[in-house]
Every structure is written in structure tokens, then in C-alpha cells.
Image 1 (cartoon, rainbow, N blue to C red):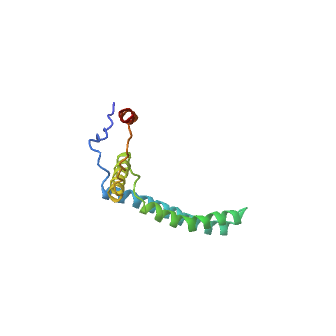
Image 2: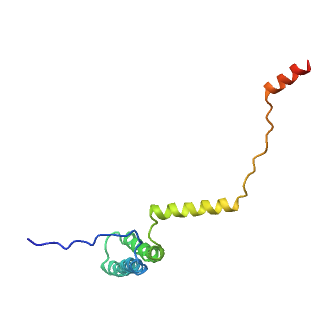
Length: 126
């Protein structure tokens, strides 16, 4: 029986290294640009082969050649999504900044009149 190598156990909450993130973004970019090159080659082959519905296929190839570079750049420059802990830490930091910039509200001193004391004062004067 063949043993499968076990994947390493994750023992940290640290994010992936910058090199790993860059490498995965580069792979996504190159694969998307390869699809763009395939759209260009496919468009040339379709024109020479005189296939049915040629305008539809050429429009799809042209859309791929125009939209894929734009999408590839956006995806390649995007960072990995934040974890719940990172979002919570960001929210706490924003709350701390908001509290530091907001002046404290002072409560006005309200005058409380005790009716029993007033009644006793009236009895004494009567």
C-alpha cells in the first residue's frame, strides 16, 4: 500500500509570505494572458477556416483579447482577502481613531427638586 505524503500541519495564524502571494498572482496573470494569446490564434484560424457564425466567434475572440488584459492586471494586483481577525483589528483601530478625534461630551448638571423637602419647608412656614 502506497503512503501519501501528509501535508504539513499549519501551526501559525500568519499570512502567506509576500513571495508566495506574488508567485500565485504571477501564475494567474500568465495563465490569463495565455488565454488572450489563444483568442488571437483562434481568431486567425477561424477566419481562414470560414466557419459558420464567423462574426459571433470573432466578436467573442475580440472581447477576450480586449477584456482579459484588463482583468488580468486587476486580479494580479489584488491582495488576498482579509481574515475575520484582520477585519476585526481594522474595525477596532478605526473605532480608537474615532474616539480620539471626537471630543468627550460633558453631561449637564441637572437640578433635582425633592418634593418631600419642599413639603416639609411649607409645613414649617405655615
